[in-house]
Image 1 (cartoon, rainbow, N blue to C red):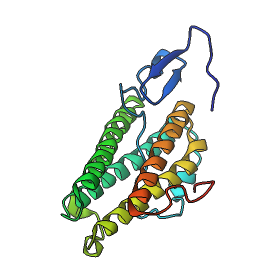
Image 2: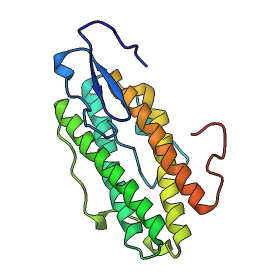
Image 3: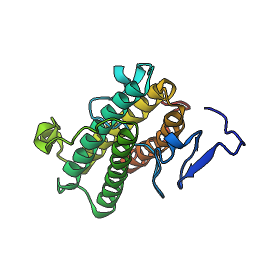
Image 4: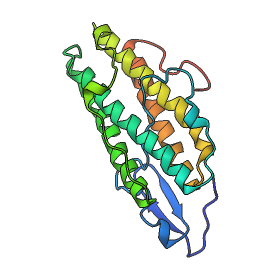
Amino acid sequence: MERMSTTPAHRLVQSQKVSIALPDERRRGLLKVPGLFALGSLAVLSLGESMPAWAQTQSGSTKDDISILNVALGLEYQAIAAYQVGAESGLLQKPVLDTAVKFQNHHKAHAQVLAGTVSKLGGSPVMAKKPSEYSFPTGQLKTQADVLRFAAGLEKGATAAYLGVLPNFYNRDLTKAAGSILGDEAMHWAVLLHALGDDPVPGAFVG
């Protein structure tokens, strides 16, 4: 993490969860959103325990950062659709359904900020796909526990992806923001494990 400068040239963008040092006017407003996390989770159903190759690629420019953020944005849209599948399955009891909708709203907020950040960096945000374009295992969701494990795998994969991408951003402000969201995704994962009756903190390390 880069150190905060105490010089007047630095300004702070603050939300409830993250403060980001912005060294110059060109970066004013980067990842700024009151009351929300500054960057989205990298949620994807296919991640499982493995770290995706794109999360291990070292960025050498703002253009590379935009590519990483756009992949993350596409995966945010996938996560939003996945939680919608769970919410509409009819398998979730009221308290669990409320939690699923809350987590989906987190992903919606993340997607909004990711898209805004891509634009601020001079890129074009990717667009969401139609729900039918995702290959969700809907036929395998027979019980509430099935839906919870489906979501827990998604959040575990998001946590692993953030661990991989943290050191790779060219813009170090993105690294600091991504670290705050890593904690958010780990909390999602822990809550879902607890709801399943599993150990919410299964080890001393994640990834």
